[in-house]
Image 1 (tube, rainbow, N blue to C red):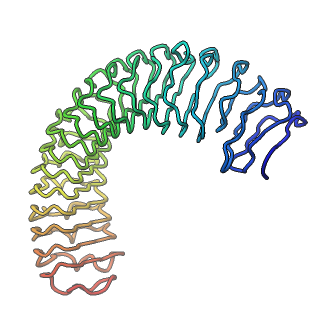
Image 2 (tube, helix red, strand yellow):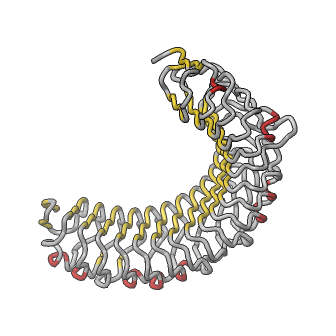
Image 3 (spheres, helix red, strand yellow):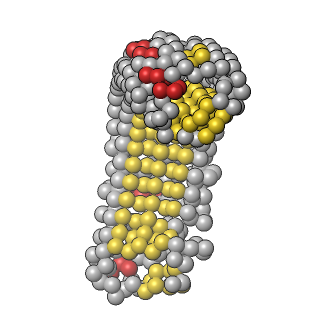
Length: 421
């Protein structure tokens, strides 16, 4: 179906969804469709033409056409503009839409979201601005005292005015904001539960997180100039992700994070130590990738709930202390840790299902294999210093996968995957 659709006779219509169909025009006195609640209208290949008068009963509108007249939509609760081909201009009267709760702008060229009077509707609960290049100005957000979710992606703003006034905010996600240097007012967001800061390459600091007592998830990714994260002691934190923060040398001790379940560090080249790791009693997943300056970890024996441990390409790490006490461990992967020369007895790891060891060139000793009664997969690749695997013969009949390659000093092993020399 292409071209024009006349809708005036659909008197009972409540929802209209026309998406990627090649239709570019809706006609037929839409405003007369008194039962209409939802319109979703994106065209295929060509930009749709402006919508005619809209029914005042609408509470959800998602379009890719130029902005229609919205002034009479007093019942509108959700407004989305997606994949617009012409520059998006938000009308100044939008602040009068007193029931509007969700405003989402996705891939719409737009230089500024500043309204004629500089404000958005104070009723908003959710505001997303995503890939709307080249947005460089936002209105002051201080009046959005009902906002609970704010997501900004691919914007060129230098600061977010009024952020500290969003006292009901629970989710904040800022990504691909190359000009943003800090998040002033962040410390006032005491109800915040999830914070993501990604690819903010000019950001040098974050305000202290000490006041964010409800913060459950913190992700900081690819912020190359960020030098520290202060106040990392919120007891509610359950997920901590730190990736590509090349200027961070140290972190505050993590010992107070008693509820932390997931810890993932990757490409933090200057991070030399992680203090308090041994006290993370709720931790279930620990992943350390490409942390090239870390030489040692604390004693891990207290991590009784840890199920998955991955240590990849940490070439300065010399040992993993307390490994034998990780009684809940189900997956263990060690790759490219070229300074580790032995793994302590593994026989107490009764729940371990997968053991993957690769490119640990100095590793010469793995003991306790005979006790791994739940082991299903054993991968051992390119570990040329290993001469023997005591206890392996006790496992061969139960293993589902045995894959040993490039271990040139290991005698012949015969198992489900064949022969290695």
